[in-house]
Image 1 (cartoon, rainbow over the protein chains, first blue to last red):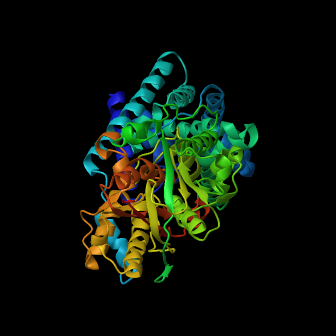
Image 2 (image 1 turned 135 degrees about the horizontal axis):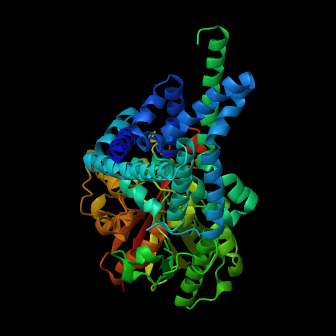
Image 3 (image 1 turned 180 degrees about the horizontal axis):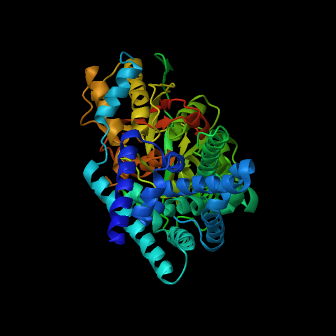
Amino acid sequence: MDYVKAFVVGGLICVVIQILMDNTKLMPGRIMVLLVVVGSILGAVGVYQPFADWAGAGATVPLLGFGNSLWKGVWKSIGEDGFIGIFKGGFTASSVGISGALIFGYLGSVIFKPRMKS
Amino acid sequence: MEINKKAYEAYVKEVTPVHKRWPSIFRAFLVGGIICTLGQLCTSLFINGGFEKEVASAWTTLILIASSVILTGLNIYPKIVKFGGAGALVPITGFANSVVAPAVEFKSEGQIFGIGCKIFTIAGPVILYGILSSWILGVIAYVLMAFGIL
Amino acid sequence: MQLGKASVKFEEPPVILSMASIVGKKEGEGPLGKMFDMVEQDDMFGADTWEKAESTLQKQTADLAIEKGDIRRKDIRYLFAGDLLGQLIATSFGTVDLEIPLFGLFGACSTMGEALNLGSMAIAGGFADKVMAMASSHFATAEKQFRFPLGYGNQRPYSSSWTVTGCGSVVLGKHKKEGIAAITGITTGRMVDMGIRDSMNMGAAMAPSAFHTIQQNFDDFQVDESYYDKIITGDLGKVGRTILLDFMKNKGHNLESVHTDCGLEIFDSETQDTHAGGSGCGCSASVLCSYILPKVQSGEWKRVLFVPTGALLSTVSFNEGETIPGIAHGVVIEHIGN
């Protein structure tokens, strides 16, 4: 059941974005920014976490989930450290994703060569 | 020319072909769904292996990113995006693709100004505005708490 | 002789003495594949960066044109050449070894037209006996500079074009009764901006400039489409062609059968997935030197109007929300009869 939910929810989020891309000609870079920002807003108003608890990877794998975890980090840090936590939580919560992408990305540049598109 | 710019814009829109809508939507659903299901599979495996939920999803993130980096290096991920569109851009794997692609491409321009700067071409804005928006929301929440509203 | 507002008619038309075209693998697999002098299977052209690959491509094409024409390098007085890269690095690095005085040109994808315009004026004016005109583009360098790194996934809209990996080079000489073809006139284009902002729809950005130049050519020479066996634009693609034909129709000209486009000829959009067609300065330059000139030489086409089209944008102007103005340069190429 978890798999079905992940498939359908994740798929539907992608469908919404596909429709948006087809209609607005928004470049992928803007789409990604939009997703993260919207994700953190939905997290802050308390919608995204319950949704993610229900949908699992269908909600956490899309970049909306990345935005939500940024917010979760900020919120948690405010609780622990007060004001300074606002500056701390975002990177703490997203550390694995960002470090992972940068480190693997760098390693990728060491291993792979540019290739022609076919 | 007799035709004005506004009329020309409307005219161009009329003569320009567009993607057939339904196939691309279906493919986005399929590809996005599959990537998220693989994510779910990872998470479940780690949870069954005794990891906490948070740690399991961190592992999932890492594995998805690593897979995307490898598929990009092998020139397969661009093909997945071409087929699946948003289905392959929206998941975290799309983010990873946007990090590794410029790193590989701009290696020829050196470690600092090539890889170092260009690795953030697309990821940079995502990180910047992600951090900024969550910070703004944090400030709002902090103020609301200070006034006892939250 | 100056003609009308923007044209020149040569009383002693310069002739094309030699031509060469080299293209990449994908272009070699297209409908014109067998007509190019050389199809390079290695997209890197044996170099280690895309930019060096494009420079190598230019060097090889220039050398081949010189060799085919049995001409000595030092007899070529001027080189008119260009590419799409910032500060023309493909040209400047590619032509160092040629040791020919260089005019580096940037006319986006219209560069071959610009080079032929200037080259034929230099010859007809008596300032040179032989000049070379050349233009190149490479899919990877263009993609990297104007769009995204190649490994980055994206979906290309149907209106977008595919940058040709290729180079075309011709050697022009003084008027005589033999040669591949004669350049009997030119019509130099001006900037035309119809307010298009979509960089994935270059055809629409350039079509008005092609229309303008062709119309100007008709006015200046006081002719119409029946004067030409073919009117060949550079890289308007499917969308651009539709627009050009519509505009022309409104002026009472039917270009349906007389018009073709290098971008439409070079790829098979059905099987090669190139969407609107080929583009880049290498597109019109390589098609000129492989498909158009041989047909003029054989007399299958007696007179053609070659109109390479360019979209003059940069990543800076695009990011600053500017429009994409276009330019198109006309060259009248004629069969040399007995």
